[in-house]
Amino acid sequence: MTKSAQLTMTLEVFRYHPETDDEPRFQAYEVPYDEDWVVLDALNWIKDHVDGSLTHRWSCRMGVCGSCGMMVNGDPKLTCAAFLKDYFPRPIKVEPLVNFPVERDLVVSLDGFMDKLEAVKPYIIRDDVNDTSGGEYLQSPAELAQYKQYSMCINCMLCYSACPVAGHEDEFLGPAALALGHRYNKDSRDQGQSERLDVMLVGEAIWGCTFVGECTVVCPKHVDPAGAIQQAKAVGAQEYFKGFVMPKGAGK
Ligand code: FES
Image (cartoon, rainbow, N blue to C red; front, side):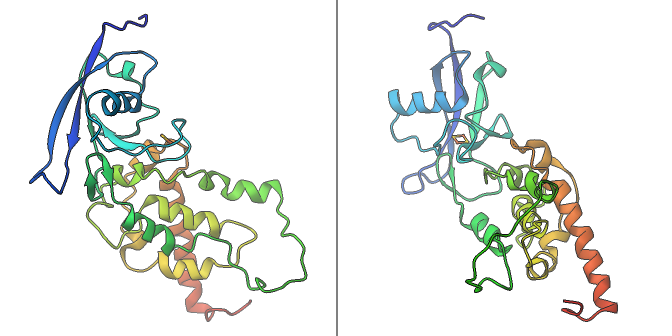
């Protein structure tokens, strides 16, 4: 189909301004149809030409920053990568990511998500951190390959909206945080696995995962959080049984 300024399509957009609205509603907008446009372009057009109060997050417009995640016809998507042509001529329903509190229109609160990322200690932990003698921690390509896939996460939170556990079990750390913890546990420069496992193995933190696998299906960066969680569970189980035969810290 060629570009045509005459064609339009309908966006049904979730609206909610907590300071004035008793409850959320949907508002329909007629937007120009362009086969090169993504859903984010249509939202920006609405904001620029129809209603400046429409509130949504975005930044890079190229699938890197992770800030434009929303539900598009019920599926968690990066709106900068969801093309109108894949839905045209049917209407598109745009909602905030599910399993997160809504702050305003299409913007959700990041607070709980950030707390979970922080909980897994997402940084290199070493015993010799105060050693000022210099030097580098060398790493081979094979060692890099152990965790590289899990380091590609852009924190878009689509995996939390796809996960049937994340919205109902507060203790569950969730796909992105668990994959991040696993990423550092697999890093040959790190010595903090036992500290992280102390957080990851508590209660439902990791064991809440029922391996539905939708987190991996929706991940735009192919991080495979479901695979990371299963690997982390196996490591955790090994460490648990090791604890029976070897006191914690022995062998260091
Ligand atoms: S705007 Fe940055 S990922 Fe979509």
